[in-house]
Image 1: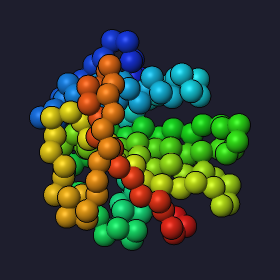
Image 2: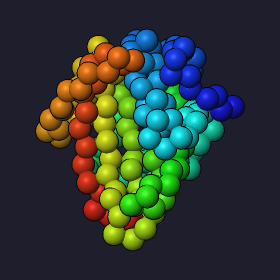
Image 3: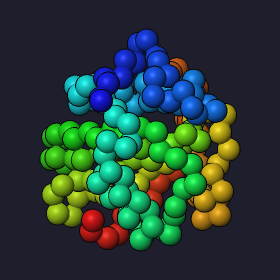
Amino acid sequence: MSHVIDFVNVSTAGLESSPVAEALAGLRANEARYFANKYKVAYSTVPAAEKPELVAWLERILREERGLEFASPLLEVADIEVEDEKAGTIRWPEFYFRSGLVVNVLWTVADGGKRAVGFKLAQGMEVPDELAAAGFKFARQKSKLAGEIRGSFFVIKGDY
């Protein structure tokens, strides 16, 4: 069952089992605000179990591109598609893990478009061992909704 994320009245619904639920909810609200302001799109999430094909797609990309597999369970998934004036159609799913990690895949549909995996860490969570061992470095960003967000990414080389 999907629910639209309200970035004015931040809720932990769907994220209650996370040890950093409040910060993760703020991060999710920050994402909702970004998509609402930039693309005029309502941001909604569903329990990860409702999108097994999308979860399998992410797992394949992470495994084949960087040998990554996260121990933390997935809680929610946002399956966003936007139209960008320059890039055309962009598929931009986001995955919320219990640990406080958010993984997104920016996938420009047109051949030769930008394709990358982004990682964001909710305030209060440590860098996951899987990312630390792979040498990822994280930039910091301030957010009114999410506090401090730490992020990193890698460019996707394959075709999935």
